[in-house]
Length: 104
Image 1: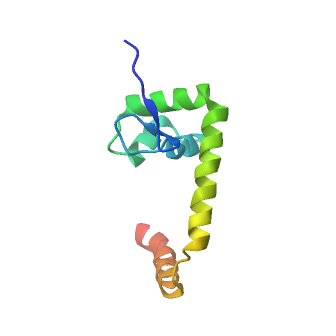
Image 2: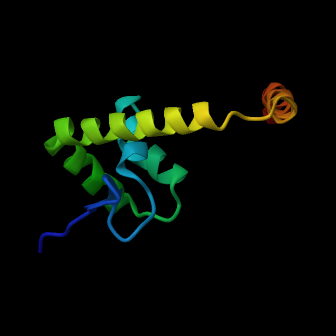
Image 3: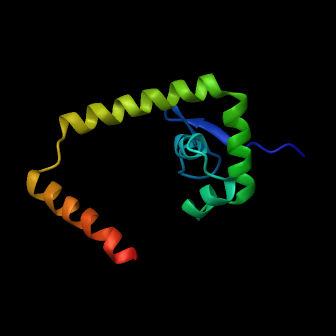
């Protein structure tokens, strides 16, 4: 039985029956993450779905990467139009600097 792991929705690709964009899976795969590591970042999807998404990504790479670039462009435009308030940015930077100290 052949199963569809990816569907096109809202101008992008998503893991079927989930809210996880294929962009996220594809980006982590591009960065060398294993399917098991990717799965651990998305607890609402199965390892089978991750493998299916990777197979779809590899089989439709040009189309998926175009959609990924479009989403990134839209996100950049949104961020430019809605900048983070400076005080909030400072709080996040402070938390990021403390994070490695807490993990050790």
